[in-house]
Image 1 (tube, one colour):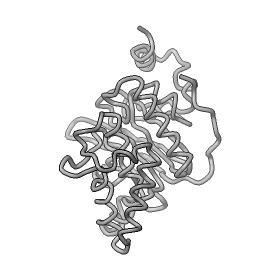
Image 2 (image 1 turned 180 degrees about the horizontal axis):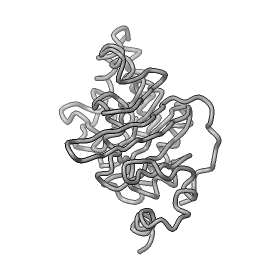
Image 3 (image 1 turned 60 degrees about the vertical axis):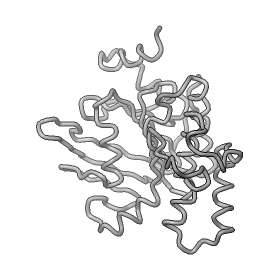
Image 4 (image 1 turned 135 degrees about the vertical axis):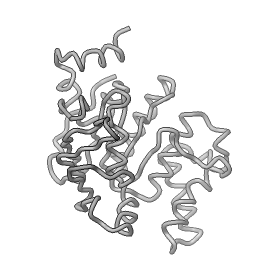
Length: 257
């Protein structure tokens, strides 16, 4: 798997995180985290299980409150805005869940219609149909529009989950372990889709993963969470060109048989 080409995205910041701290009792998860996401960038966040990756994205979308520090999303300080403003902000931030979070009792069409009908009250039936069909076409699953989630493979469900997030045309995408539980060929397909979403929909994305093949394929920049802080950031090679004993086992587990 080739490394994604290096591109300079240092223009507009769409997420700014400074001095972020979060603890649960005596368990200190995030210890002064600093991180920026730039418009149009795919940023991969790496780390072992339990290092606070999922906690970070829950704080970004206001599901958890930080103990200290600032989180600004699209120029809004998440911890200071009203609940109404937070709901409006969340419509601009798409969250692709690890388990796809599809409604099993709904067809693929109905799964995609649900967020549209709930959040875009002024759309006609023709508008809804067009949005559903074009979004499914973008993820390569227009033919599955009338199927039930139980009839789909794991990779297809992952694609439908991404499509349901994309249908609201978010500016920012948050992917939580997008390749977890998938076979190697399907992982490659999902990595390709993440890159296609970036190019076609001009999204800025944070990709939470422990899959280094995914990180290398989709990340314009990689940030590794170590001991509660982002202590290594840069290209994939920048992060892993080190003798740091905290980093080397992570690489060897993924790539050395």
